[in-house]
Amino acid sequence: MEKGYLHIVTFGCQMNVYDSQRMAQLLSGYQMVKDIKKADLILINTCSVREKAEQKAYSLLGRLRGLKRNKPYVVIGMGGCVAQQEGEALLKRFPHLDMVFGTQALHRLPELVSLASQEGKRICDVGLSHNGDMAPSCVSPLLPNVKSFVTIMQGCNNFCSYCIVPYVRGGEVSRKSEVIIEEVTELVQQGVKEITLLGQNVNSYGKNIPGELSFSQLLEEIGKIPGLKRIRFTTSHPKDLSNELMECFARIDTLCEHIHLPVQAGSDRILRLMNRGYTRQQYMDKVQRLREILPQVSITSDVIVGFPGEEDSDFQDTLDLVKKMEFDNIFSFKYSDRPHTKACSFRDKVPAAIKDQRLTILQQVQREITLKKNKRLEGHIEEVLVEGRSKKDVFELTGRTRSNRVVNFTGNYELVGKLVKVKIEKAYVNSLRGIIVGN
Image (cartoon, rainbow, N blue to C red; front, top):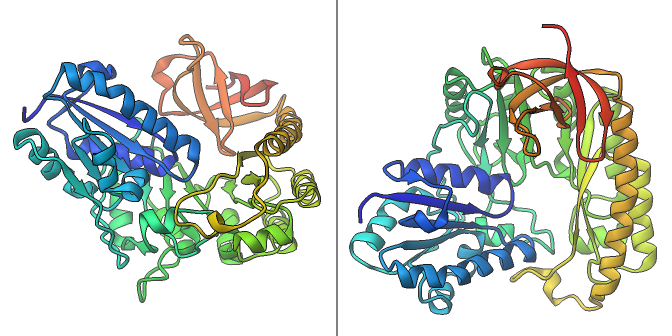
């Protein structure tokens, strides 16, 4: 069956959401369906950065065995980091799996699907070029007339001891700035108001291309594009956060007042074991400098608990840092061994019960901080980009502030894609509630 119905399941980060979007565009002859049972082609886009996401992908793939038995013509493919990590082993483990395609094989997807669907071949394409095989990006809004992702680089050279990214996405490779600017311009012409620039470490953008723009210079150029209302980016590595980049927040009107700056731990000993490349004090100094430049900046972070060898004193250092930094929010995780990483071989693994306990304590501390900071916004008027209907109430709209907070409010659906002023009436841990004011 050459064409038919396509269903894509995505696990993991924003980069994977973007990659799934590209898959759908490359296979534009297929019609997207929400019901996986109606699909002729099922693609699972995986993430192996966290063990939980990897296990969810395996669980789904296992459940598809019965579907394949009843509909033998269905083509099932697995892509992303788990596919890159496991390769041929997946075909052996799951006989009903037709395709395994790695992180640098997306642009070959139509050819791979054709081989699997028309010729019945089982395929594994996980070649990884550390010189960078960065395929052209596909341009299409993530949400029509609202926002879109644009990849500016892929891969990572940092080799944090717990992280699998360099092994499954290769070394850092930047796209040419003129291509990125052209893509953003085209998206804005389609009506997109907000762009999020993606990369494993956007702060390193351009370093591998002689004469290329720095990340700060790229932001300056994108900020000049007429019609673009908002710019965001993720993810930043603290060791590469320069004064030049921090000053962009004060200079570029369209650059939103939010940065995701993963700290991972508050103990210098653990940071060294993680190979993060900065100390606790250096991280805190950069946050202080950023807040001096832009006092209203919203800072979110990542924190790992239970890293091998983490003692109670190390965890207390992390708690202390979180309290002092008063992040607007954090994404917190229990450490889990990842294949190929150096930390896999570390001794003194922290027992699961202690990791659970520490995560609970950390999350409670952060919830209190987040709620306190959100409540400061009650009575304030915030600019909100309307994204669509609220997930919890179809009669309400939802959008985000420039500081990346979710706001729910009553309004006409015709406001989707527009910037509106919303007075915040009530603050919660995960969202805000308000009413539209003015026109």
